[in-house]
Image 1 (tube, rainbow, N blue to C red):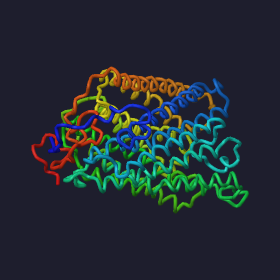
Image 2: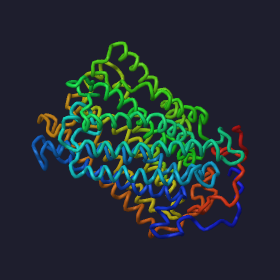
Image 3: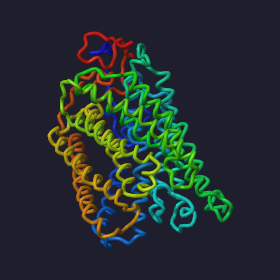
Image 4: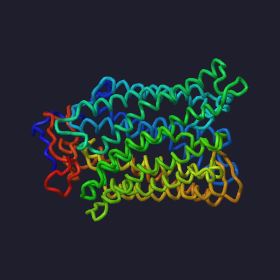
Length: 537
């Protein structure tokens, strides 16, 4: 194991102090991480319930349980809550908060009070969005103009909530950047950093640089609705396509805010359960930064059918293909790490393997959408829905579940039921594929998204998709029950149940209040499994 010097007698674990004020006023990065985890998980379940409801409506072409307006409201809320309250802050805010100081040998983040303030801002934004449920928007989660200017539903309240959430994202990103630069333990060089830290660093850069763009865009939308200024309304001299350009300039980098932390999680899980050093450490590390950089130049592939020039479309098509290169680097290196490994199919590893398979499908179908001729046919069809969910759910959510099962003993000091966890994984994997694979076929056949009804010839595939959503929902329900039950009835977790070499496993489970009684001195590489001595410098 890597040589991490830690004193034998450590302070009381951070979970010992109880009472609501000890949590909501705590500047302990671990408690803030848990508060984020509980909050985003709650919103994930709410958004998932919305999805199950409108997916039931699509079981048959006829009206089942709701009218078209209600359908529009539900898929708007599903998208907005899932994206802005779960996926964007998900792994970055919850696991980033808990793990970054532990992984780099620090006692806390650089600005603990700012960290707590970031969580309060997140809660404020979430409360505003929940208030918007009184008269919810029906625009879709992208709030496209000109409809978002004209609709009578409460677009202002939900976009204001997202505007507020942006400040939380920016401040968290700034905090993480400073923490990684300034608080690394002695000997924790850049090339000894865990790959989750590299991923968190790249994500933080995206949060700081991209989030202000969507915040200003939504502020302009609010100003247009309240003051009548013609930014996007063509009747007032505005340009609705300008909104799309601004929105996707943020929202495509936001895709990587959602996915890069999950990639970091996979890079941590695979070498532990393959018992091999990570293959191509530097390539994986720098590919995170490459993805972050290139993501700023590919936003217009969402707008190939909007009337942009052929020259611009060709350039953005090329850049879309280019971003696949650093992503593929990660996939090939994970696969090479698995090759001839002594693989332990722990539930966390099953989610990691699922990530590789499902995210690869999402990535490859994204290449189809980057091809100009194919995109004209597939744009705004269910092919887009399937592609997006293979990236967001097959990628981010699988990474989130993998992280939950991997670091659960460290977070809470308890063990969950591993056999039940594997059953839940199987249901999640099968249910997800049964839900979204048929949607690729529906999209190629021309079924448009965002409609509450469809021609009868699409019914069989929609029935499969809806049944798959039920299986997926049951699997997620079992995951939640199993992990909650583990908190109360689970066996006490050992300090390092996986024999991991990463620094967070060198302290008790759960960790002490200030992590380390003495700041550790790092002398070895984190991924030296099967090697007597570190060879990575």
